[in-house]
Length: 313
Image (tube, rainbow, N blue to C red; front, side):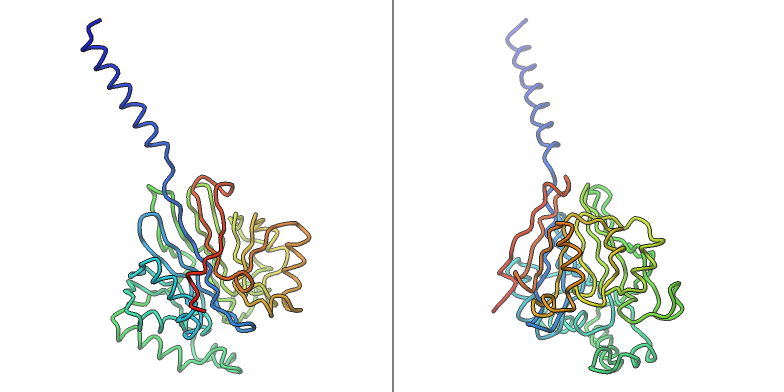
């Protein structure tokens, strides 16, 4: 065999090996930060998703003031200048108020997904300023003034679905506040149940879903299992019942809420449930902002770390 033939064969073999190694490399991880948009007792939610394809999404935005000090610093630190979408799970200011901070900080927002309650729904929860229809309407007007489209959330919502990456975020369930299958609910109960999937790893988000829809889904819901689970309603009463937690069967649970509330009587159910099952429970209100390195290869390749860059304090 000539030396030229041997050399050509060696080069072909080398190319095959290089290509095999290249295709065997995993995609970049998805980075998901649970921001600590809380004080000692006031709770909020904000989850920044930095996708491996470069898109950025936000699920809830916390209160306006807390977003300035405990969400925007991290967004700026990671050079996020554009959000493909902001998903507001329900019309309470500790979930949507941070939209003002985002817009005032000149962050480009392609779309906001947000179901507006009607006046009757909101007025039932007016006490303590939990839902003020005037403020909700003003927020929609602010978004319109800044040419940011608002889109509804339904049970069929697909926020993204990148088939080539096996990466998706979809709504599994979303209930109206009135005439739901479990009866009349609250604005919290309108929170969509959403599933994030990246390869072999999954997470479940359920906003501030309460006991009634949680019990209903524990009995009839499908596809609720997930590796990571954001415990609804900031991990405190009234969250979903334990049998809903059983259905999710998470390997790690995350809580967005403040340490004083979570460590008090209102957090007893969640503390006892996950403690009795020796399931790791990570609390942003205690540890600070938490970033999940969400690996497509599976839960065992994923990790969680504290992210101090998300707080100016």
